[in-house]
Length: 157
Picture 1 (tube, rainbow, N blue to C red):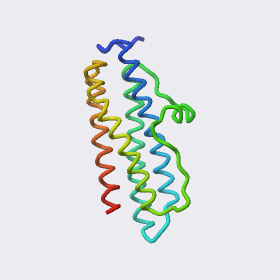
Picture 2 (picture 1 turned 90 degrees about the horizontal axis):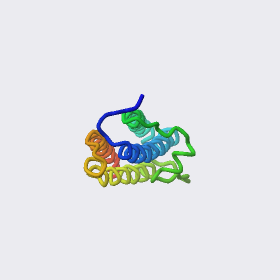
Picture 3 (picture 1 turned 135 degrees about the vertical axis):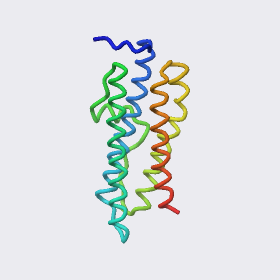
Picture 4 (picture 1 turned 30 degrees about the vertical axis):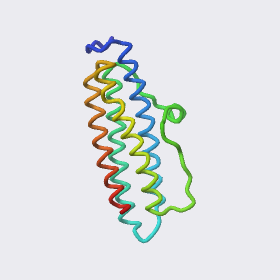
């Protein structure tokens, strides 16, 4: 059945594409955070291991929310690794040292990239694509990433 929620089909397609790019970013950030959780080493191991676990669990919830938002507006979320790598703003990485500060700096950069991308699109969703719901949705995501970035930044001081 057709989704008729007051958003023109062309606009909902643009929103879905943008949300799929965000979904790709979130998946890459999730994998990078899991990597940090699994591979961090050093005298602060246990504390940081648990910290990264809290962060990846938050991202896991964000991923589900984004996919469900895409379905809510009548489209399908990307669900392949190849698709995520094609759409993401982030990059994969390999590390020589598995210390907490190195992982945190890298993850902080990714959170900040996502925050900037979200901030740049809030008004676009609301005004250009006439989807106040998705605009509100990504505003909430931006606030979540801002808090997660603050937590990483606080560890690096």
